[in-house]
Image 1 (tube, rainbow, N blue to C red):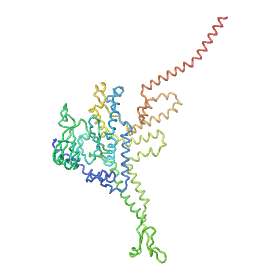
Image 2 (cartoon, rainbow, N blue to C red; image 1 turned 120 degrees about the horizontal axis):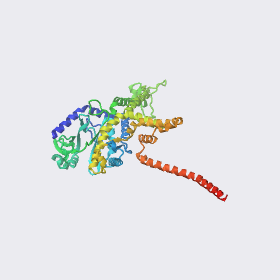
Image 3 (tube, rainbow, N blue to C red; image 1 turned 90 degrees about the horizontal axis):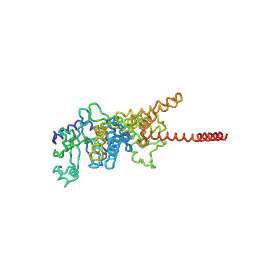
Image 4 (cartoon, rainbow, N blue to C red; image 1 turned 180 degrees about the horizontal axis):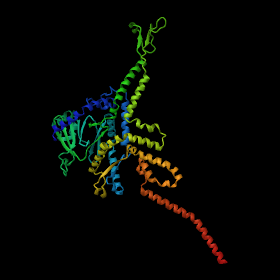
Length: 537
C-alpha cells in the first residue's frame, strides 16, 4: 500500500527493530563522535556533549580512520575508478575506450565541482562508518548541472534488505522549518504548515520520506509511474501524503563496515574496541585524580583547631605548625599513586583502539622511510590482504551504486558524449574498474613477483643469455607502473612504443651507413688509381 498511514506504520516498525543499535550508537557518539550524540535524545544547537569524554584518543583515532578511508578509497587528487566495456571484444576498440574515458572524466568533473559538495559529505560518511559502522549518502539531482550530495545522519534513516541482502527500501524521518517545507513542497504542503510559515517561519515540523521498489511500475510511461523506484513524502503531524514521485536509479549510497549474521546494520571499529574505549576513559579519570593528589596533595593536620590559621598560599607563613623539637604539625598526604604505571596501562588500551581504527596499519611506511621499492610493495600487499573485506563491501554497496546514480543523472542532464555505435550495438554495457590505492594494494602481490623477477634477471642472463627472452619486459613494466599508481598519461601506449622503436631502427641504419661511407670512398679511390696505372702502363 502507498497511503500515508501504511508508510508511517512501516517506518515505525523498522525504527523499533534497531532500538538496541540506537542506544549503543548514542553511547559511542559521546566518546568517539560527540557532535553526533543525538540518537535517543534531542539537544539544542551548540549544546556541550563532551561531559562523558575524559580522553580524546578515540575521537582522534576515528578522525584518522576517516582520513585513511578517504585516501585509500576515494582520494580527491586521483581518478580512483575508470570505466571499461562489459564486452571483452570491445576492450581494445579505440573509439569505445575514448568514449568511456571521456565519460569517466565527466563523472569526476561533475562530482568534484564546488557546488556538488561531494568531498566533505563523503568524509563525513567515513566518520560515521568509523563510529557507527554505517553511512548514508543521498545523491540528489541538481537539475541541468549534475549531482549534489548530502550525508544523512544515521538518526534519520531506517532501511530494509531484499531477499538477496541488498538494501532496497529506505525510510528517512527528518525535520524542516515551516518556511523550508513551503519552499520544498509548495502548494502540496499541508495548510497548517503554510499558515505557520507566515507567523512562525522557523518552527519545525516532522516528515517521512520513503524510497522503495515501484510495485506498480508501468514500463514505457514517462512519468514517475514508469520509474523503478517509488518515492513518497508524508507529513507526520497530519498523517498526510504530500508528494508522490519516483527515481530512475537508486538515490542512496549505503556504506556498511562489518555485518554480523542476521543483522541489517553493520558494526563499526568503535564497537570492536568498545571495552578498550570505556577502560581508557576510566583510567584517564583515575590518573587525573591521582595526579591531582600528587601535585596538590591534601594536608594532614594535628588537630581541628590548627586548621583556622593554616594558609596554603605560596610563600605564606604558618605559625605554630612546627613542634618544639622541629617536627612538622602539618604534612602533605602521600597517596603512593603509581602514575607511570597508569599511563602505561593507558597506552595498551590506546594501541588496541588504534589497531581497530586501522591507524597502526598505515604507520609502517612512515616509520620505515628507507625501504626499497620491493619492500614497499610487500607492505602494500599486507595492507591489501588485511583490508580486502572492507574494500569489497564498500565497492559493492557504496561506490558502485554511487557511480550508477551519477551516470543516470549525467545522462539525463545531457552531459555525456554520444555513445559509439559499436558499444550501442552490444547494449552499452560497462563495468567499473577501481584504481584507488586500496585496489592497487590488492594487486601488490603481482608487483612483488615482477620486481623480484627483474632483480634476479641479471644473474640469470650471466649464466644463459637466453634468460632475457623469458619475460616481456615492456609489458611487465606497464603492469608494475599500474600497480604503483603511475598516472596513465605518463605511460606510452603500444602505438607510441612501436613508433619510437621504428625511429631508433632508422637512426641506427643511418649511423651504420655513415660509418660505411669512408670505407666505400677509400675503396673507390684505390680502384680508380689502379685503373690509371693500368691505362698508363
